[in-house]
Image (cartoon, rainbow, N blue to C red; front, top):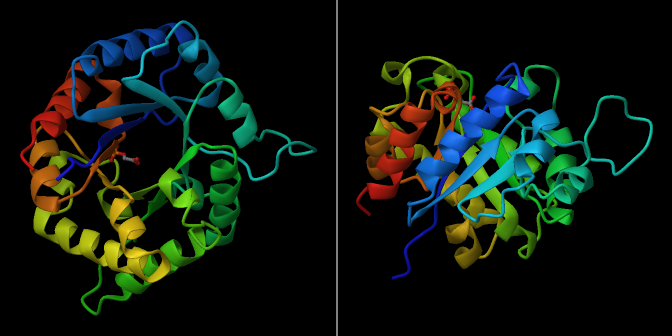
Length: 258
Ligand code: PGA
C-alpha cells in the first residue's frame, strides 16, 4: 500500500521578533528538512516574513503557510490578508481557525468562509479544531463534530484534497510534553474525526484527508504520539522555535514505524 504523506507544521505564532532571527530559524529548519524522505515540512511565520523567507528558496521540502487568512479578496478590511495575496507570494498553506484566533472572536461560520476562500485560491487549509475541556459525558465530541461540520460545510469532494485537519485540544496547548494528550485518547479522537469526515465525504476522500495533532508536541513525545495516536503528523508551536528540538521532531515523525 502507498505510504501516507506525513506533515510537520511549524506555527511560529507571534515570533520571532526580527526578520534576521526569522531567517536564521528558517535556515535551520530547511537544513533539517532537506534529507527527510517521508515528511513535508510547513513553516507558518508571521505574515510579514512570508515573502522574504520565500525569496530565494526554490526547494520542495519546506512549504510556507500563513497563520490565518481573511475570506474576502480585496476591499476595506483593515489589517487583513487575503488568500490570493498569500498564494501570490508563493506560500501554499494557511492555518485556519486556530484556537488563539477563536479566543479573539472567530466563529465556526468565519472558519467556514475562510476555508472556502483559501481552497479557492489553491491554498491547503489546515483547519484547527479542539475542545477546551474533556467531560465524562462526551459533550466535547459534539463540540468537535460541530466545528468540523460547519467549518467544512462548503468543501467539495474536489476541494477536499486541499484540507488538513489539525486536532488541537485547547487544554494541551502551550504547556510541556507531560501535558500533551495520551496516545490512546488521541487515537480514539482521530477515529471519531474520521467518522465525521465519512459522513460528509465519500469513503476514499474521507480516508485521504490528513489528520494532525497539536498541543505541546516536543521531541520526547512526537514519535509516540505519531505512532500510537495514528495521526498523519503534528502542528508544533513553541518547540518549532528551537531549531534543534524541531529537527528532532521532524526526524521522529520521519522515522516512525507505520
Ligand atoms: P504548542 O502550540 O505546541 O506550543 O502547544 C501548538 C499550537 O497552538 O498550534
